[in-house]
Image (cartoon, rainbow, N blue to C red; front, side, top):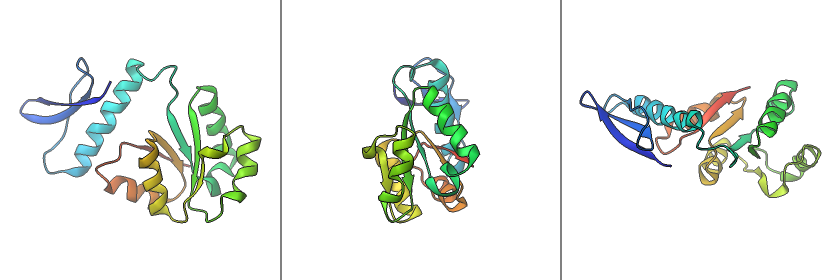
Length: 155
């Protein structure tokens, strides 16, 4: 079910499908618009439209998956049946593969992009809905992009 445009009290908004709540935003305020879209996606999760399909969830590697907290979050996401990706700004994917193999993450879901900007581009390309990262720069890039609907969780 897609995100649909809606309006409430003469304000534009977004909702999940046809029956959901309309999350309004302030026109010409990109941050407000992004937050309304994110709320609509979370509404889809709450409705249960993603059950059984597995969400596409990604993790940064350095200072995210290499931490105890990052490993616990990875295990939680795996138990929920989500599709896991490692998307790092590292330059060489070979340093990421031993970790991926240990945790049962397929090699074709591991990416070394070379920069934070390219990492965010890969997140968009893959349709990731939740990304775990430690870098403020990644958060800033995601927050600045109106074309992304990603729930970024700082680790």
